Amino acid sequence: MSRWTASLAEARPLAYWLDDPGRPRPEPALTGAETCDLLVVGGGYSGLWTALIAKERDPGRDVVLVEGREVGCAASGRNGGFCAASLTHGLANGLARWPDEIHRLEQLGARNLDAIEETVARHAIDCDFERTGEIDVATEPHQERELRDWYQEMDRRGLRDGVEFLDADAVRAQVDSPTFRAGLWDRRGVAMLHPAKLAWGLKRACLGLGVRVYEHTPALGLRTDGAGVAVRTPHGQIRARTAALGTNVFPSLVRRARAYTVPVYDYALMTEPLTADRLASVGWRNRQGLADTANRFHYFRLTADHRILWGGYDTVYPYGGRVRAEYDHRPQTHAKLADHFFTCFPQLEGVRFTHAWGGAIDTCSRFSAFFGTAHRGRVAYTAGYTGLGVGATRFGAEVMLDLLAGERTERTELEMVRKKPLPFPPEPFAWTGIALTQWSLARADANAGHRNLWLRTLDRLGLGFDS
Image (cartoon, rainbow, N blue to C red; front, top):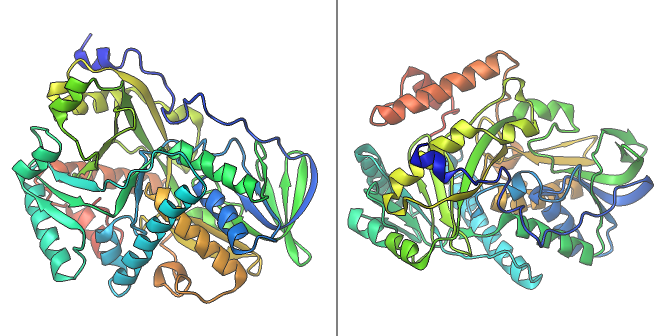
């Protein structure tokens, strides 16, 4: 038995965040007929923020939320707990796609993160919210050069506020790994939190404001119904004046929106709580989130009880874009992640992992959210957050509510909101293109960051991914 296998011997195959004795009981399923002003479909962050903000904007609005399983059980309860201000899946992606809007997008993102922090405090949501920032770390010489160049580019464009460049000594003074060569510390733009507790807290806040929540109530079909819409469920029907769809990785009730997203599976490990000596060997006194800057990157962070979450690297696209529970577990990826963990932190050899899990992320060809309406403006939808939805879904909720109200706002005037990404092609072309891209990104990591013809072509088409 290898030391990596031994570290995983007792790992439970479920998401650490959801394995909580304080997990709330689900609300009853819908049986019979319901009517409401606004129907929200989906009990992840997109739906929860939409329902909460709708009631805060208009306390008299009658709001119903339906969730196919339990609130927070999918991506909202399985992620790394990084809550970023970025609305564009990082500044580099936003700058490449919306250069004329990037300053406004950054301002809106900062305000959105402030609003999340304020909401957590106002509703007393106990979700371990810590605004510690994030360090992007270089582990290869070419990554160090790229970080320095990017820092200078941010400075040149007036986008460097709150970001500090760390050389090898400075980054290792923050978090000690022999693999770290440099870092960029975004001090204010990222918070750490317990993602499932955020979802459960938002559910409690919604219930407190009078939102009717039905769990284990999948939405099976959507149709126009007079001046509104109707949604069919297994044991009932809901008629609503308007509807907001926050189903993200799951097939949209608006069929034409389905081609814009595909699911990719991401995986993570959680360690046992670190002893004081082990934690001291790593440092990490400022508790930042971290991510390395490879194409196939890792993300890692401390929890409130001093565990380390370690995730990323492999992303797996299932042929045909199917979302299935069996894909949530991938032992070969968990073993690979364990190996990488001890390479990063050799001083932690002997630490055991208690949880190993995975889950589906909805991604689109521009790697950040898109928006739309259907049924003559009575239905709004958003999807495509590509793993950075913990914070950006709140912004997406406001966009959907603006669209349903028919209002022209600072948000709805954005090109990011008005235009959609390119759709994915049908199979087998989607699988072939994604597989070729993943192979090319791995080659670039192994070849000092040099991008091959395929990646350069995607870059020219605005489809490149370099996160």
